[in-house]
Amino acid sequence: MGWFDCLSERSVRNVARHTARRSFLSRLGVTLVGAAAIPALPVARAAGQREPAPDESGIEGDPGNPQTCDYWRYCSIDGFLCACCGGTQNSCPPGTEPSPVTWIGTCRNPADGKDYVISYNDCCGKSGCGRCFCNTNEGDAPVHRPTLDNDINWCLGTKSNAYHCSTGIVIGVATEPLR
Image (cartoon, rainbow, N blue to C red; front, side, top):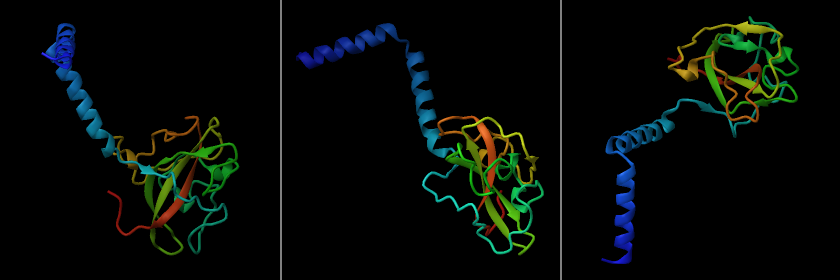
């Protein structure tokens, strides 16, 4: 036998002495299932997307007051409104950063009667704003549908996972309702 064969045999026998087959198979199974599930996580990734300018509504006739819960874009929001916390309905306040993952909803604009896809972005990095709390749950889905659930702290992938406030950014016109 060659030196490589001897080394391989010694290594395999050493692992076999210290590891049970069931333990190895269960760890292998958990690893394979976990690795297969990672690409299936249904989240919207906002990194690389352009954030609208603070005064850009993206729509003609943007009715309502962005500092109140009955503003049309906030039909599925859950949290403090960034428009009351030093930011706008489109942008995070200074000293915070938007989370790269978001939840989405579809809201009807009363001015033009169209449904729009809204990206609800959490702004992270400071403790909760404490002003203008809204909890509207139109279209909210259970936690097993995370992209449609507004009860999750979406401050993932940021420097700090401290939640401060939420924005409601129009992505575009909805062609069909979210399910």
